[in-house]
Length: 258
Image (tube, rainbow, N blue to C red; front, side, top):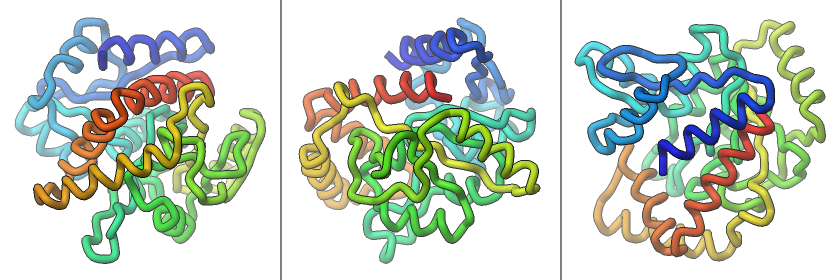
């Protein structure tokens, strides 16, 4: 399903007049754009493909490994080749309980220092969204809700947090991105696009599933880079696959807007 979704995303990008360039590391080589065979390889590697953030880039390249890039790593590579906008599902942020664990995604650091606009469905709902928005404000990162006054929460259109900026057209967003560049701002921009309403998860149901998954993660002492994949997988199981359907829908919608 990962390969099929990636193909559909690339088709959406092409149909809107842009050139898709999926980023990944294969056999130690950084690729900006994958052909059909490379895309299939990436999708079938499974656990053999390392979740690769900025800190992992040198290791994966030097050991000739395979890496699926996080938002942080994708931003960094995109900036190296002049790509100014990229599309993803949701960004990382401050994990719940961050005041005890200090578990904060490197995505936020990258957004503060790398000039790339990230089109997403908001901050992943498993995270502490209010604290993440505070960190982004401190870092000077513009956070835009596209046609949304309430900041979206990945699977859900609702988060309980106000979108710092609301813009209702892609032209307005493009002008903001250009203005940031003209002002020599070095930070990124977040464009948060709510998941399509017909595919959106029920906020209370997703929150219940998230709390159960977090409890299980705590009992199993799952931490660090392993916690996000575990939580997303468990939420998908608990919701009977609905969260996965929402995930696919939101990525395709993000590609259309981006």
